[in-house]
Image (cartoon, rainbow, N blue to C red; front, side, top):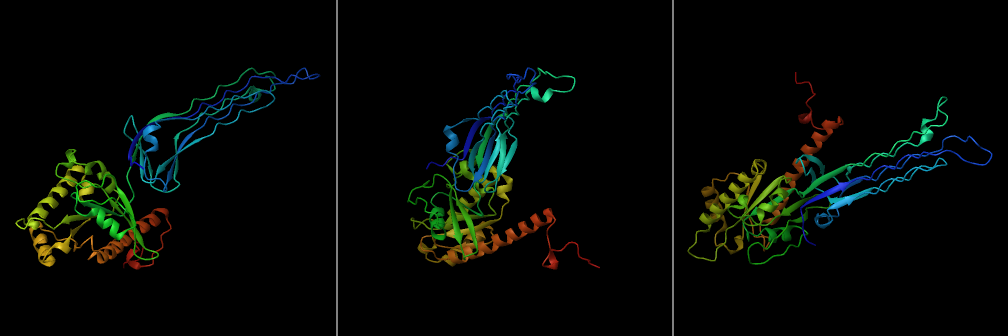
Length: 367
């Protein structure tokens, strides 16, 4: 299935049915009184987040979604039927914008989250609602209200804990296939990855995290070079970025450390140009393809010194799996720590937080 992460659509809710102007006409009941029913409600358009969908391709071609109008009211106290609602299923992680103003309307970040995109119009009132002691034969009725109408832009940002970052052929696809259940296309030419791939890394029966692999970045990506800039938005929700650097070389005269440092700096500069928030995310350095390097420890030390890197660094081989086990264990511990902080923040906001550790209890007596 083709991966589509942007779409612009128009949603139009149904109009409410008109109220009826009718009087009861039966034999031997000459003055039966008003019996006009109300009109039915017009159909609304909803969006529902569905974790079983991973692309917006359905909305690339079906750009207009029109709900039906409600039925008009009828005589004999008959109310018009309400029109059926339309449910638009979108991937979890979809952000919905107003296409005219650019305003963010909804962030569909939870499975089964449901929001109203366009509300159906209310049905009109029939004349039976206007009868009174001084108005025995009302001729008033009201028309149904118009439904809502909007032009919307859907933008998908995949939900992942860890994002893979690096030049084309740095080994990102090989790594995600090694440590997770993802099976991306792997080949020996640049830009093999054409769309984001998600993989679940399971470290035990109860612990796991999600990794996202996007097309490789090249210098000038923030100005449109290559493919990676089109998918950088998918890294904005991640907690940790794994920056993969290829330290192998097919040229015996090439200094892989110098080349790798230059590539790493170019990638980081593209992040800075694209988005400050993405640039400031926690970033771990991963030196890949050490299985074809004669002295991995020396390469690692030289690289960190030349790059001025003081953060977490790992030397691995995504192909053979060397060093990957320690990497995923450390990632799992870091992700669990982030989740614990998030859970505490959510409990505090909901007023349900109970401190199990006095270090997290801001209400304790410090005297």
